Length: 294
Figure 1 (tube, rainbow, N blue to C red):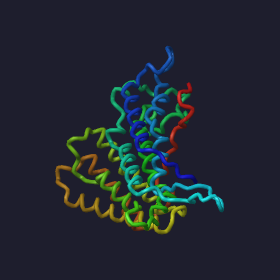
Figure 2 (figure 1 turned 45 degrees about the vertical axis):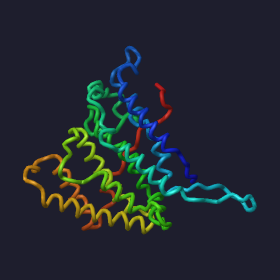
Figure 3 (figure 1 turned 60 degrees about the vertical axis):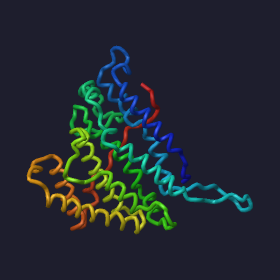
Figure 4 (figure 1 turned 120 degrees about the vertical axis):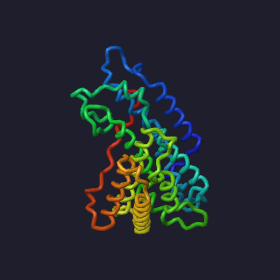
C-alpha cells in the first residue's frame, strides 16, 4: 500500500490536543439527564485521540514514497523514507507510550460509575477485566497495543529486517529502542507514581506478547521472525539476570511478581512448541468514528 508521509509536527500537536482534552474532560460533555455511565463512551475518542496520527507516523518506519509510475512518465517508482525521518518518527511514537501519558487521572476515574446492564457489551467502550467497574488497565493496554502493534506489524517488521542500506533503520534497532525504553529492570523509578509503574508493566507485557506473535506469524519474513525470536531469548536472559541479583526487599512487590511472570512466559515459549492460541490476542479498539456522534 501507499506509505503516507506525515510531519512529526502533526504527531506532536496531536499529542498536545489529547493532553489538553483529557485535562478538560468532565461531565460537561453530557446533556442534562444523561447517565454518567455514558461518560466512558465520550472518554474513548479523547483517550485514543492520537490513534490516526500513530497509524500515519508508523507508516514512515520501514516506509516508502512511491508512485504508480508508467513507462515514459519519468516518475521515480519508489524511494525509502530517509533514515533520519524514520528515527524521528520512532521517537515521536515512543512519546505515545510514556507511562505518564497513558495514566488516566484519578479525577476522571472518580467520575465513571459502573456500567448499566444495557451497555455492558457496547463496542464503543474499552474491554474490561473489572466489570462492572471501569478498567483503566484495559484502556492503557489498548493504547499500548495501538503503538506497539504498529511498530511490530509483520509486513513493517519484514521491511525493516531486510533494510541493508548503510545507516538505515533496522528491526534490530527498533527492538533495542523499545527494550531500552521499557527498561525491564527490577529497580523501580522513584519518580514514577504507582499508576505509572502499573502502566509500564502493561507496556512490557504487550511488547513481549507482540514479539511472540511476530515470531509465530507466517505473515512475517524468516528474517523478521528470527530477529523477534532472538530478542525473546535476550529478554528472557535479561529478566533472569535481574531476578537472580534481586535485593530481598523486592520480594512480594508487584513489579517483581510481574517480571517473574514474564520470565515464565518467555521460558515456556522458548522451551516447548508454544501453542499459538495461548498467546493473548490483542483486543479490538473501540470504533473511532464518527467522532462527536451521540
